Length: 321
Image (cartoon, rainbow, N blue to C red):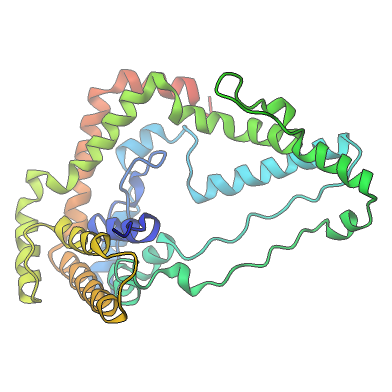
């Protein structure tokens, strides 16, 4: 069986499912998305998408993996490395964060309908396929090339540390990992700890389940029925919004590792047609906006129910205390 590529297809599919909820992400567990389209309703959708979700507003002091925070952390880590290497007697030029391939940012800018017309759900027409591999240039290449073999070895030891025999008992010792490990520990340890702390494992699991409830919430029954009727007119038989993406995901998962071009082309055609109809019907019936209302309501219920745990989590890991 062929595994389904999650990073683009599932993410873009989720964008179409909840495309008005962009403010909801809280450390990667939310299903917040952007809204758009070509009609006048798309402007209203984007205005709606700009609203900050209750959960994000409540927990935004916790470090997260959004693009802005990632760029800031990368810059801070690179500066720590440069300072550390200077103390060790070497030069090191902080490196820029490599540019990222097209992603959900493009989907938000284009709107779900335009995105679907170009990429479908993202399997057959992945945005990554349009971008060639970026040539990475080390700004210290000339400096490194002029080093002797012993100097190069000393530089590498200072930057990456010594080799370690890692086992289950001792683990990896970051203090022996050179300037890179020092920077990663100082910049990323709190981020990782916030989401890996066993004390809050149940809280994160409950949060994940809360977001999973959104598509099945009874308050979306009416708009799902409207969407289903719209899809029926386009030649598709689905009862709920989530079924459209699921049908394509299952079809790709069922493909054998090696398949003929005709079968692959047929599935590509089916994916594109389904994704385009899905996006248009969601926009027509106002599904993104209604889904956002439900999601925000569930988030507030989650906050009210788990306030003590959330407050303890924020107290321990907030970066702006």
